[in-house]
Image (cartoon, rainbow, N blue to C red; front, side, top):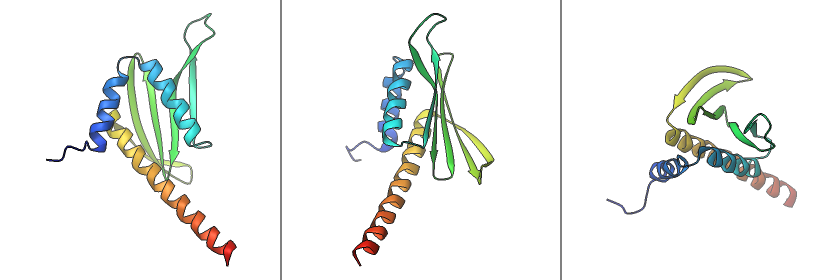
Amino acid sequence: MSSIPSDFDLNAAWYRKAQGDLKAFMEAFAVRLEGAMPGRVSVERKKDGLFSKSSHASRISVEAHDHLYVLELQKERLSAHRSKSVHGVTLSTEHMAVPTWLSALQGDIQTLAEHAGNAQSVLHDFLMS
C-alpha cells in the first residue's frame, strides 16, 4: 500500500479540520476560490448578527465545465450538491458528501485548466506562425 495519501484522503482530512470552525473554513475557502477562478465563483455572505458589522460566507457557487457546485453552511452544518446544466437548463442535482464534492470539483477545475492550457498553446502557435 502506498504511503502517499490519495486526493480523497486529503479532502477528507481538510474537511475534518474544517469542522472545528465552519464559518472560518467557508470564508477562507470562498476567498481562495474567488482569487483562483474569477468570474466562475459567486459567494453569498450573511451578517454574524443583527447589529454586527462582520459577515461570513454562507453559500459558495462554482461554475466548472458543465456543472454548478454549491457548498452551503446551514445551521452549523455543511451541505454540498452538484447540478448538471446545459445551456442554462438544470438537468439534474446530486447531493454529495463534502469530501466527494471537493474531489469532483477538483477534477472539473483540472479539466478547465487543461482546456485553458490547450487554448493558450493553440493561440501561441497561431501568433508565432
